[in-house]
Every structure is written in structure tokens, then in C-alpha cells.
Image (cartoon, rainbow, N blue to C red):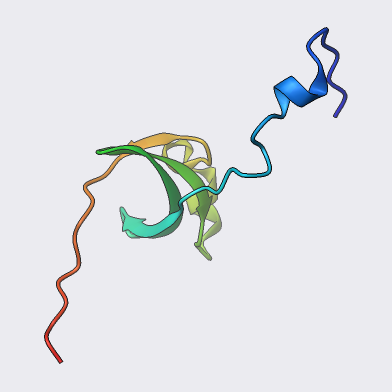
Length: 79
């Protein structure tokens, strides 16, 4: 990829090395997927974990799509 700009590369890519995304694996609509939370109730689809080719043709689950989800806290049982 070529990027033409009058802004120095150091300014454009500042902080890129320290960026660590927080991905979650969820299931929505019967499809397992990896998401990146945006805020409390929205997330961006990163990738699908499906063996069904029809799931990849569904625009509703295309990577980059913003979806609504509800984070669920896991309950830990005492040992």
C-alpha cells in the first residue's frame, strides 16, 4: 500500500506499535465469531469461525460490520 501525505510517517503511525486490540469470541445467530468491543453494547466483527460457506455470504455477518451485543459476566464457582 502506498500512502501519499504531507504529514510525516512518524505522526501518522504514532502509537501503532503499542496498540493491542481486545478481541472476544462470541456466538450470535448460531455463528461463532471474533469481535472487537467498541463500547458497552456495540462491537465490530473481526472474523467468522464457521464451516458453512453461506455464513460468509450473509452481509449481516461481514467483517467490519457493527453489531449489538450484551456482555455477560461469567460466574465462578468456589473450589
